[in-house]
Length: 296
Image (cartoon, rainbow, N blue to C red; front, side, top):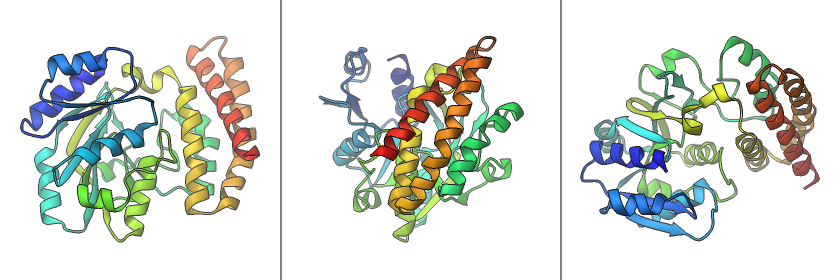
């Protein structure tokens, strides 16, 4: 609930006349009361059940009247870019989706653009996780980490959905976010479908936001078991949809032993490191998810 207030205040500051739509995923933390009290001009949509990030965004987009819509995570704060985004969409008729520069609560750039997943990239992304952790990196094979890629405007294969501008007509023509993804990878799928339809996806450094994931703890707190399980499920679903079932099966057969080994290592190292213990539990949960997906 603390996050949503800062999120909405940032939008109201940078876009004072914009239509503000808040979709509440059946929360019970006081979010509805906060919105009604502090942002009475916002349109509050209360869902009876939590159907996932993409489904909530779709509901909000259905009600939006603007030609350009902004999807912003409740734990993100917009810091600039509304005018830059409006200029881009006004001057580039083939532009469908626009992402920007995202930093964490410590001001460090976090990957917000990436490469289209393939079985090999998904496998390498997770099997090289220990090396990335030792080197202090967080990009991996699925993300673009080159600082130069974040210094200037460029076309991208996909951009992050945590702060995403979309041309409303394109978003609706694409059917919005796929409901096949509960959370995570739905942005990758949307961008991929946009590019397949001949539309452009771009990165704009003038669009900036702070994403205080997990209440600002970020990567230092370790991987969330919930996030890892849903990320892997999304990646497998993406491979099955866009690459074929065989690619998804190959990835799962490789990820199951990888996650099991990382999980056991985390549990062992967790005696001295709370972060390693958190990661170990997450990877064991991820291994379980992969095995269930294989059975399915």
